[in-house]
Amino acid sequence: MTLIEFLSGRYGELLLKGLTVTLQLSGVTLAAGFVIGVLLTLIRLSPFWIVRQAVGLLVDAIRSVPLLVHVIFWYFGAPELLPDGPRMWLYARDVNFICAAIAISIYAGAFISEDLRSGLRSIPKGQTEASLSLGFSSLETFRYVILPQAFRISVPPLLGQAMTITKNTSIALMIGVPELVYQAQRIQDITYEPFLPYASATLVYLAICTMLTLASRAYSRTGVKSRGAQA
Image (cartoon, rainbow, N blue to C red; front, side, top):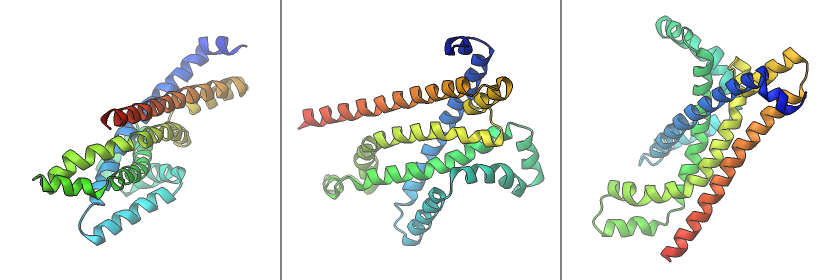
């Protein structure tokens, strides 16, 4: 059986279902991870030293633990800590997908926080001083001057995080989420043929990561040209 014949039949439909779940999980975790990353970054700008240190330690702790451990904890451990009502509500729904999304979102949020923090730290202090001298308040300076510049600087790393998140969704197969690799494994169990299903999954991941890489490079080139035009 050729790859074309393989993809055009029933097994291609299974892989398409797996790809749909992968993209859904990637989209949810990227959006939630970005929100978490922004919140962590803002908290780390607190004037209180103890708050900055606590959040910094939390981010380091999250990043230091393997993602697989996060996923297993949120699936097997965290629901058991809930009261009976919320726990039964959770188990009545797609608990596998929800727990995987929570785990990957928190994990991604910690890395996104570092990317955004690096972008903020790269803005020269003169920008803040100039804005304040023009009559902007501290909040207006951060919102209209610092944050837009930091976000533009952080876009390439964030696209890299999108690539990482998409690949990391494959770990969700460990708790039964029927994403792309899960379906490839299922096809292998049915056909006893490992090459075609895993080769197909590999090509899909390669295509997604290639598109994100090209988008990052195109954005970087656009940024260089715009800065050159402004100069």
